[in-house]
Length: 173
Image (cartoon, rainbow, N blue to C red; front, top):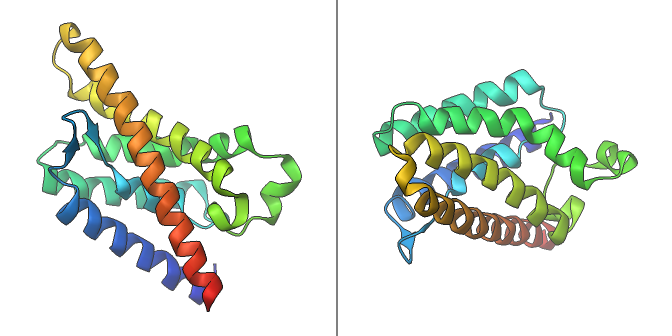
């Protein structure tokens, strides 16, 4: 990872954390769809990041979110799970030869449809773990399922737009 890539990634982290903590913290579209943009910091990690380092970064990110949301390890556990399955999810939607040529997993390197699929599966796993651990009873299963589906779609759509805007911004330079 070069210095330019590290600075670019740190900018991603600060922007996404700011948006999560100050814009989307208490936002629920139609009461069901929560936007979890901070997982974009895990999805946009450079490809040469080792799995252990990505899980450590994910834990720190999730722990920070837990401190602001007053949840006890829920976001940290879900973030670590996302970092753990990230290479496997990339492998689902990629041909083996194009994995090696990608410097980052984003819209610029993989395309908008590829990144949307990648973000959708990752956010679905994240939301599933988060809302299942958060639910207190089996009687609210369908409510939790609706929150999982709606939040996954909104999060994946927002992360795809964010990655697209960031890629078009860097192309203009």
